Length: 213
Image (cartoon, rainbow, N blue to C red; front, side, top):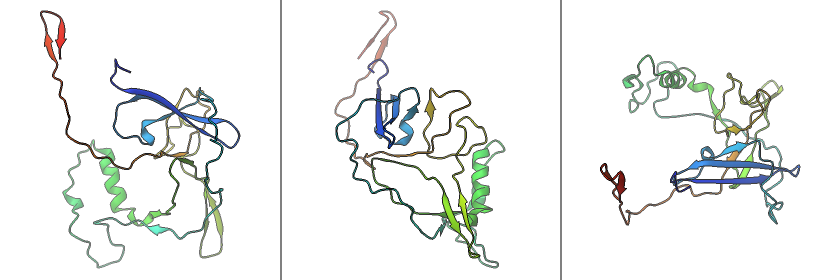
């Protein structure tokens, strides 16, 4: 898009039912491509079949069993009595005003509920779409509980909490379910940049009503 100095493109992924999930980037001007650069367009059903796209080489879907790992971070409050935390992280020195709600919520989460969070590691292949349908938790009493993801429901629901999910464009009002798919793009994790080879300076000429490069 020369008039915007950015790019527009679309990409799709085949689904098991024969349809496609189409992602669009309407204003891409960054040097890195990740999940937040794309939106899911509900109005586009297919971009067209590509020979060989049905063969992905991915392993078939199957559950896996693991033990959750408690979350830990620098300066984390110790849950035991009469113990001292590492002084390298000083949460008391954080400057937050009454309008910094996000910062205040983060501090409360880190100091009050830090020992209630766990991590379940899961290795995913690059260039794939992943969706967690739920977790089966077995406790010490032998009970087996099924827990669904917290970000399910209607996409426009104000109380829905979500992270790392794609925004849906052109979806039917108040009826479209939230897309909880995790997009793993086959891109570089980091890149090296050299110094610019050229610099262009724009000078505005008010008399001639022009801009000189």
